[in-house]
Amino acid sequence: MAERLVVVGGGQAAFSLVSKLRALGDSRSITILSVEDVAPYQRPPLSKKYLLGGMEFERLLLRPVDWYVQNNIELRLSTFVEEIDPAGQFVRLQDGSNIAYDYLVLATGSTPRRLPSAIGGDLRGVHVMRDKRDADLLMDKMNAGRRLLVIGGGYIGLEAAAVARHKGMEVTLIEMADRILQRVAAPETAEIIRTVHLQHGVVIKQSTGLVRLTGENGVLSGAELSDGTNLHVDLAIVGIGVAPNDELARRAGLNVANGIVVDEFARTSDSRIFAVGDCVMLPWRGELVRLESVQNAVDQAEVVAANLSGQSLTYQPKPWFWSDQYDVKLQIAGFNRGYDEVLVRPGARQGAISVWYFRGGRFAAVDAINDAKAYVTGKKLLDSGIEPDRGLLADPSSDLKQLLSL
Image (cartoon, rainbow, N blue to C red; front, side, top):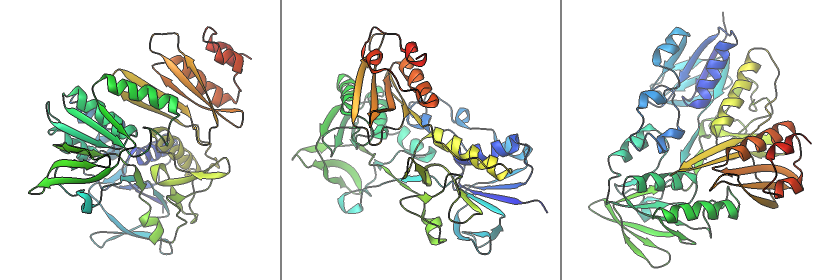
């Protein structure tokens, strides 16, 4: 009998895996088990064009539902997996039924961290932004004149603030750290983004935490901040990070450490179980990291597809990310973890600028703000392993193309 592959999760990583398998001519039985009630879709536009009402949901679908039927892929929606039995090679569903597998791929993603109920996290009007349901709940509430509190100065919070200002809301954003984007960007990039938001009317309070949210009859109405400020609030969006969905793997006895630990082939500690996407801790330069990006979900899933089809490929991450806020497009190539030096370069066009990261003297990443040329150049340098000439890079009159020809 043909082998059976079961995929737990219905996001970008799950879709990329099964579509690559079929493209490789793999005809094994495939079942996708997704907790969502819709087919796999693109998540990044949810917090941008979709939330603004400028994109129909059907345009976000990675493929129409008919595609799964035509490719002999069983797509089971609103399906919850309760348990994995590695010894018996089956998963148990919430309804008590079992599904056997020859190979299992965990593409369980991550879940937004929420505020505890003790400080008002359970009040109506307090939201997170991760999936279609979150976006749909927010869409009708983000109306002109209403007062929004954004808790957290990461990309999710900043993108939500930009959408809210576009819709005419009054927006206050608070960040406990001494600056926004502290974990993911250099102070130079953070200051550029902060200035953009200030110019669009967002009130940003750094080094400011939330003491509690307050409400009336269970409905959010205010917020008490650590600087003593009391705000009138109609809506709150919590953007304080995500937690990997690794509990299934933990209970199954797999190696877990703030994510499902995999090797360079994306295999877990059980050779018949792979894991891909946001839920994964993967090897990178001698350490384990989580990469929460579309690029990682797609590339890692395609490596697993190749390995399931008989190849033996290792996953070599080449990270890239992006964020759209107002008329600013931030594109990031590389991974700036552990950087110890930055170089700021003005772009050729008005408003374009790039921030180049170095670690131990070697080029690590670039943040390109409205500077596609810097992004493309940085990505090519990273892909090729070419170290940029510092003198040329520091000279704004030089052509970035020269960096690739040395």
